[in-house]
Image (cartoon, rainbow, N blue to C red; front, side, top):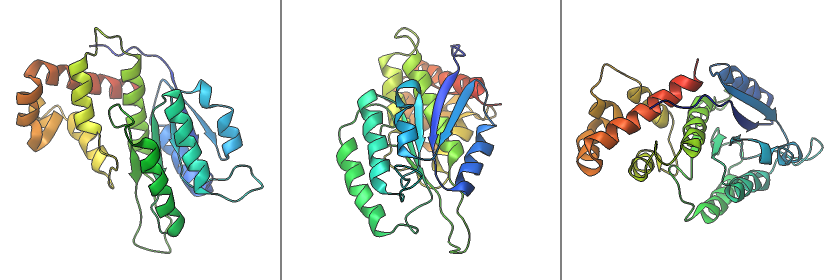
Length: 233
């Protein structure tokens, strides 16, 4: 299966300079992708309708003159759901915002309850146990996820069928991906030294083969590999 090399437009919302620089650095690992970086809700609202996916911080300001709030993060999710856009929240964890972070999570699960599609409630986070260290965010996981979602959305019905969508949902439907978990999945799938069964599902490979069939599993793994190769340098 050949993934069409359409240039994808990814919107990145991040207001912390250190995290923004890291996102820009990670973005250089990709090709056939145009990344637009903004730091406020007002800037993002002007671009929601022209992007293929959104990687968003949780706490960011409405304008450059206002303070960061989780309501802006919630609004980004609401716009993504309304426009049926892939969304990946990318956060460094709750230490910086504590109580507000818990309030965000309550609203997050309300908004995305019943939101269908593979990996429909993604949440990539990382953190450091050193309070004096700025934690790194999982931008690579967020970008890989968005590229897979956007590529799947652009595939025609006869090249990515219903069974493959169900398998993708099985693989990537977790609401929260812990530190590095998603990336370990992708790295395993790209490892051609493994059998197709091991690469696709690790210990769950035999179960996936029995449930979805060898042909569906192989075609889905081919789709994932071809997508990553198409958009990663």
